[in-house]
Amino acid sequence: MSTLQTATKIVTIADALRDQAILRPAKTAFVFEGDTQTYDELNTGASRVANGLLSLGLQPNERVAYLGKNSHSYFELLMGVAKAGGVTCPVNWRLAGPEIVYILNDCKARILVVGPEFVGAYNAIKDELDAVQTVICTEGASEGVHDYSAWRDGFSDTDPEIVRSGESDALQLYTSGTTGHPKGAIISNDAMLVRHESRGMEPPDWSKWTADDMSLVAMPCFHIGGTGWGLTGIFNGATGVVMREFDPTRVLDFIDEYRISKMFMVPAAMKIVVEQPKAQEVDFSPMKYMLYGASPIPLDLLKTCMDVFQCGFVQMYGMTETSGTIVALPPEDHDPNGNERMRSVGLPLEGVEVKIIDADGNALPPREVGEIATRSIGNMSAYWNLDAATKATIDAEGWLRTGDAGYTDEDGYIYIHDRVKDMIISGGENVYPAEVENAVFSHPAVADVGVIGVPDDKWGEAVKACVVVKAGEDVSEADLITYTRTQIAAYKCPKSIDFIEALPRNPSGKILRRQLRAPYWDGKDRAVN
Image (tube, rainbow, N blue to C red):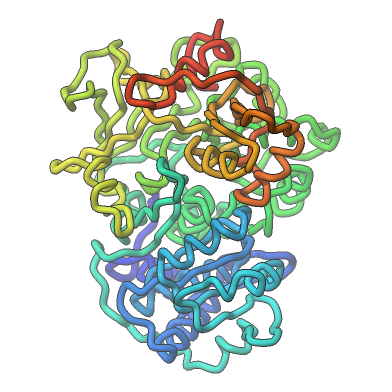
């Protein structure tokens, strides 16, 4: 949340960059692998990108896809697409080839920007792509692939100044799909900017940013946690230090070298970082706040992290469909000795409404478990070309069903109890069983399969497949896991497989996942980890 003055009226994310280029042109916007980029350079580069895209015939609201790891070029592209009136669609580079093909075809991207690591991946799938016509590589050129810098610098740095409304699309992020295909969540400019202004109220200290902040952009930009975090730095005139790929063994080097003051991680990554010997040697005094999310933090890990980082801790709860955080547990509620509120995800942020509802959408009183629903400007506009899925998620009054089961206490703190949907969260990544089941079931030896999440000390939850093998067939756990990796991203693949005689199903044939899950969660006080 910004507490800074603005020089221009900010309606879109591109306006926020224009504003910073006026207020602090010589200030460093991003640092990436030794290369620095000022706000003036970022703004000028984005204008060149915009003019390049327009020369390629980019139409209003047309999707431009990005398949690459983090870099300052990604944020320049993001802003250039916004200036040209388009919509950026970053693709999860951890996905398998068939999944990438689906997303690129679904968003109908004619223009694809790739990182240097993915030129080969593009060449392997290019014949399956329906729309892609122009491919640009952020670092270098090859046959049929333009070099980003050379391409960009061939165009004018005059801002095209295309007018866009706050309701216009800014970003399209793909989330795991309940039916086996990912869904494109459309996020508007208003949604991305919702926390840029304090809207007349004094924000809590942990939410305040200054232009002196050094932010570590470590989460992948195909997630709202990566793109949203990088944009928040821009909105506030801070400096973002970009990690190409999150590497917990190098986080301490970045904190030490750049005097990082704010960062976001998932608990599984925090554990790896604090267990490094170097964690006892780094000076953490510049660190103000550690923000974390995707799963609760075990109390023992919190104690260790508080001892090591010596800063304020804030738990964040949100999802792609809410453009990020909607609920936060502030530092003052983080007690290393444990308390009831440590089991909660916190209180709704300013401008965010949250209620607990029953199956019919009726609000429930405190302490009664139901589905968590939320309403705010930050909610996605829709799922791309999926009207039925959109209507099932957002009602006519703007309330979005999160798929999480929970309750509130008498003070409004929100507690996650279980999941209404069958989603698994492993190491901060969302996995839907249907995607994994489709991949496993395509193996010729599999007669039936049910996929569940089971508790895991390192990743929070781990993916487990319960498999029925066809009569006369023989397949090993290792063979099935190896096969599945050719179909879907490695992080979605089962970490273990149980071979069973039959899956529990209801009379209509639906897998009774709760029955499958029950033995693994026995003794847990909640069915999420």
